[in-house]
Length: 162
Image 1 (tube, one colour):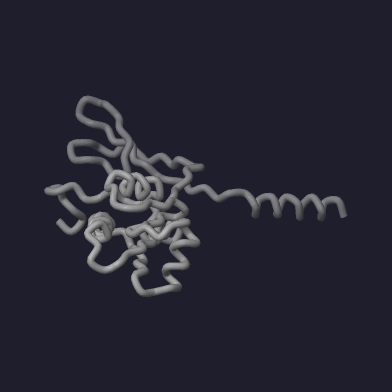
Image 2: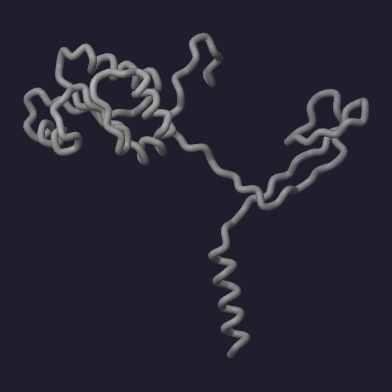
């Protein structure tokens, strides 16, 4: 009976243990005998062998959709609002998905804005739990950075499409 209990406890502890990946890297030697390690040997080197490194925690990078699920962006606006247009453009330049709510003639959206933020200022943007009012590009970028959204592309830099 004790062996059965011990075996069961061992099985449960192994099932609850985190699973870590192993990666294999190649040892590459250049013409001068210097070793380097990489997933594949670069030109001008010779593969000496492979090494497996166990216990490497491999995490998949978050997508914008993952970030948006954790920190949704909500923008309260009214028509013909220059500051609203600037906030919208800042969000678009970073590829941030946003839910926009017009509060001009919509009592439900007005009540929601007042309940969430305590005011009726537009534009008002929420990023997760952070609340920003008006247009301040630095504050917008800081809130998006804190939430984990990717930075805007650098003008002239190559993109994945290039």
